[in-house]
Length: 210
Image (cartoon, rainbow, N blue to C red; front, side, top):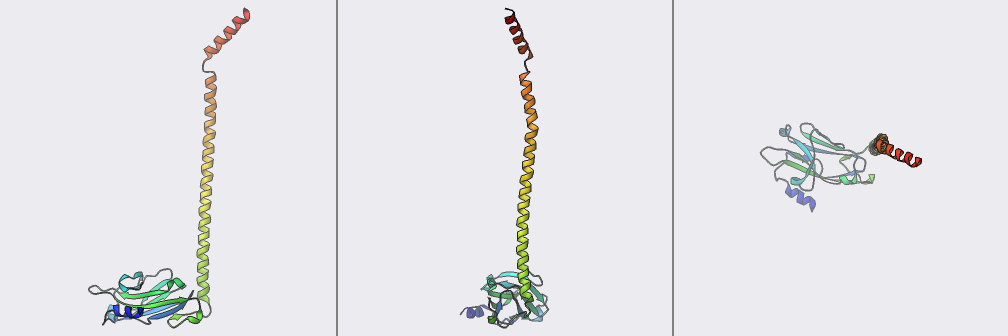
């Protein structure tokens, strides 16, 4: 039923962009490839790859020939080739390849991607690497990302500890500078009235004579 609704949403006589397959299946950590064929008349037009159930509200992932961390787009002049590496289950969904047109609605075609964790469920449309190099590469990439995250956390902690140490040292030095001043002020207050001290001494001498 969903597939029928999508077919009805496409232009009736539009064949500028044609997806090679409407349903694709892939395996986690493997690589997916989609090929969108188009009329050579549109070779200079902007092509893109987007995700979403409805064509008019899909989120554009990348424009050709730009790429993201896991999605690479290649425009050959009559084909738009999309390659998605390191598949995860969250990649399951509906995708569209499209051609931007100036005075008309963008021409688009779709495919449904289903990602599983069982290699026996893999179907046509996705290339697998029997040697497991891609799988190891994806796992290594994830391990590197985790390691980089750990290093960043350690770096932030070190910066915080260093900052606290600097603040403590500055505070300690400031207190050390204020202490001699306080002692000087205290000494002055004791000797601040020498006449009063002299008067007390004279009174003591007079009393002693009496």
